[in-house]
Length: 179
Image (cartoon, rainbow, N blue to C red; front, side, top):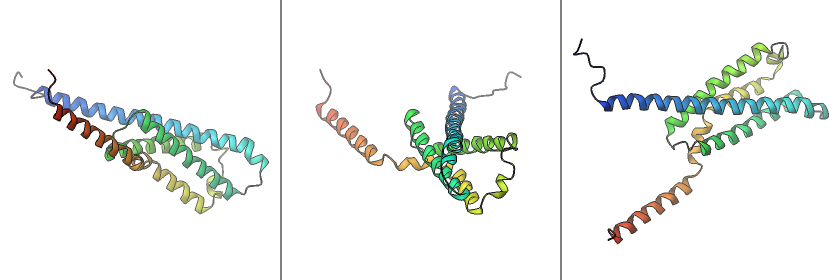
């Protein structure tokens, strides 16, 4: 029993803990991003149904398109805020993982809303036009790609920052050590 070694070195222990930490960060940011966007979506829908729908003569299709556009706008705003606030690294798989976790939580939340509020949504799913269903499905599918799509956002700023860092390091090499 003494010859049983779970980890051969401290490095392998740190690798395992690092992987666990990355998963925890992905789940945390994904959950918060999903909660923020879903709460915003529901608030927009509540506000629009309560105040806007009564004062306008929108058809069902126009109403659905308005809500989809509002959801897309709020998703983009929240994604940008989360990328900036958490300073997410510019790693494709990392941002895609966060988006997939968000998609998972959002689909679960949407399913719960439909299941628990089935009286309010009774027949709504079946009376919605096919174009709106496709647009909504596309919105949910593209929802996980929003943090990933923001990778190309600040490429010019990143290039300028790299050039500035390289110039500063060359300048320091030219000066040499200070005595």
